[in-house]
Image (spheres, rainbow, N blue to C red):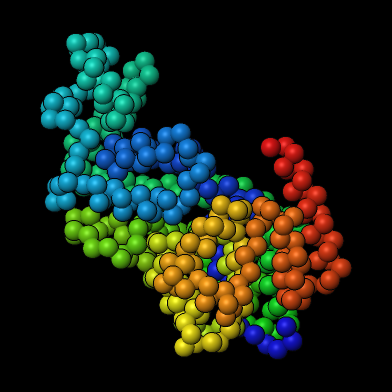
Length: 380
């Protein structure tokens, strides 16, 4: 890599996770910042969706589920409530005082139903603030509550990400090694642009990336504006289009499409290339798989394991219109599994050396990562 080149680096949540940041969907949903007790039909739906398998849920699963929730609604104009008419009548006159005085002893089943739906909260008795917070909101329209629920998810996620410990990336993190290699590419005169789908700040404490532009696709914690929603490829009734990212007032994505088409090299780390972000990648990969455009580009994709590698290939197959073989033939993309480096160590070594990393250092750090990978595997 002797000539000055243009490099685009695309980051997904897998990048943060590889750095050791607790930014998974599971981490947030189990935190105190998640509004999982808010009485909205949308929250109730999400609570029922993955009760026993949060570990496997990705952020794109949430985005997809917002769309699935909408598609499952039968009444798009008024929404569908989790409350029965009997429960609504009961709530209109309900008070914590009345509960403490045992006025509702003959309504135990009704009370339990409301507790199960997250409308009433109590252990020995309801939380004192419940009257002003949950009951009043529960009597508002389901669409109103769903809109507020999404706002609460955004607000809670922002607070959660600001609260988590941000460890100094270790040398044994492949994500750290990537940033180190990128910094050396910049020092060598290459042009690098970073496009991140994460909300966290992209930074290195020991190496200078201040001159590298970082573009936040969905906002960032640094400016206090984060965007959560589904894609806008499917039409929605106006009552529910707040579920789409594009309807967020803060949504103004940078032009990643032009950047991809005007670069020499694309590096993707920890991004699924799935349906919710399809619009950003389809033109690039379709073009690179076209027999009418034989301009080779270097493509490196860092993913977690065998399962995610298969998912990446399926995504590329879709993005290229079932011309994955042409994409591979023209560009020879390298897919490197960060969780199975023993099988892909040569690919990582070649990547690091090609990006201005000393050969001896590349060999040593890969050896250390493999030893650490073995230890972590033993713990599991």
